[in-house]
Amino acid sequence: ELLYHALQRIYSRYPDFFKDSYNPSLFANKSSQEALDYALKETLAMLSFDFEQEMRVTNFRLNQWISKALQHRQKDDIHVLKEMNSSFSFVPYEVAESKLLEFEGPLTNSAPYVHVKSYYKNNKSFFEKNEKEKLRDALQAATKPEAENYLSQQNIRLRDWATHVIDLEAEGLRQHILQESVRQIDSERMAMQESSRLEEWKVVYEKLKKGE
Image 1 (tube, one colour):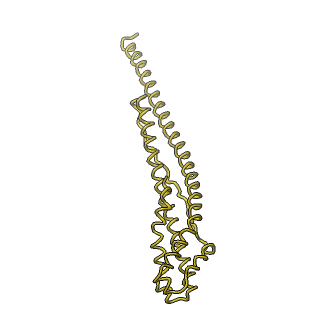
Image 2: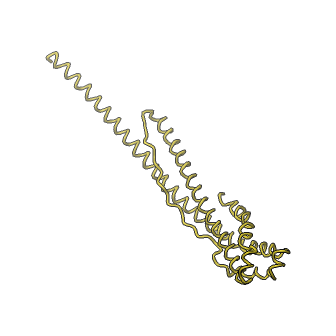
Image 3: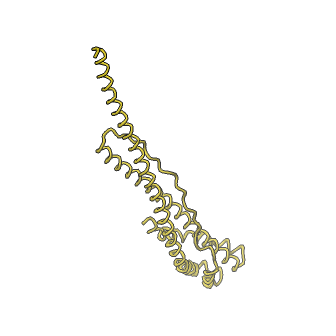
């Protein structure tokens, strides 16, 4: 669900990436082929980095969601146990700091996209007519399949990561509550035994006072 709108968000920023890369000053200072190669790689690099950032933010938010879910689970479990024994008092379970995933963005190879250079004829028609927009739209359409495949792969990685973290922390929480419960039950049992012994000693003491 967190990745559902990622593609839309990233490509809403794509026109700005394209505009920054394919600018008139670049083409004025380089040959057309050099400028086209450089602008293409720059656009792809910005897109790739934006995908990486989206994945990092998604992973961070997913981690926060898991922590909150575990806190709610802990609260519910403790509430149930306190209904069974009102004297129970639990030390809060601390969720471990999970190691987040590393991400490397897509579109690292410009070779599959060099064909968009065919939309360039010369500087005048590129910047004064609609050739620039045609190249922009063609590049967007060409990169989307790789981008969609990348998001699909990262979705699987994030799901696997989340499942592992949830399983690990849920078991940690279960063990923590179990150990806390056992400790307090043992403590109460010892207290009850001490109370019973005290009563026995009181009886013996009274008998001794009476000389029995």
